[in-house]
Length: 188
Length: 100
Image (cartoon, one colour):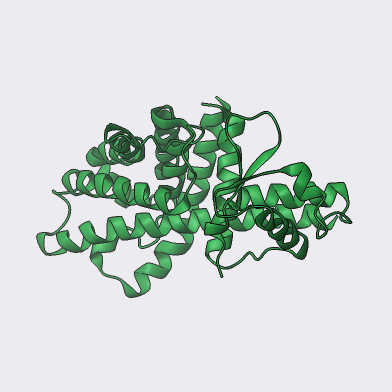
């Protein structure tokens, strides 16, 4: 229960920053295609880190976080326009990272936290990229009826880009937080 | 999954990230502890006992708390690793990971 609250809370926070800060800036210079995809999608970082810790047990928490985020931050007109596809989109997004770890496990690389593998941030980014490809394919299918054919390639390219930059930004933020805690405790 | 182990791995990973993106440099004490450990081995991957590092001339005057903090930092950075299958405090010296 505690894990669900932490993951869902982190997801809502990251989605809020993306929706209220990243998206408005993005809309100043980007095209129609970016209604469906963000250039810096922070919740992907939460997906990957949650799946790294919990595997498939992160799935319900990610769904809860994504549903709450959509209700809180998606404008009503966009929400109603995308209504039938929204649940499918949330499901695809929430399963992308656990599925990427499962795929890595299938090929003999158990990269979950606490499993004895050497923790490597670049490897986690690679898993994030794989999860993003899974997500991108899924989202392209889910939103195929909504996206103009000429924008399809742009959207398909923006999804992985935004997901990986979002994951990197989350890891960077965590790194700075841990660094700040360490340095302030060493100084006191 | 061992939750504490996972948290430790997260900390190790982020500390290594700090180092690899150039934000983190070894403190003078960490450098001394690593140099002491390195001087007690012949090549990267050799094992050294904590007690021998502690008695090294570079480290012997450092307080115990500072020494152990430096050891922990070097473990987080992956420059030292706990030797497997041993109860004694033995470390593998990973000088191969030291950036020049």
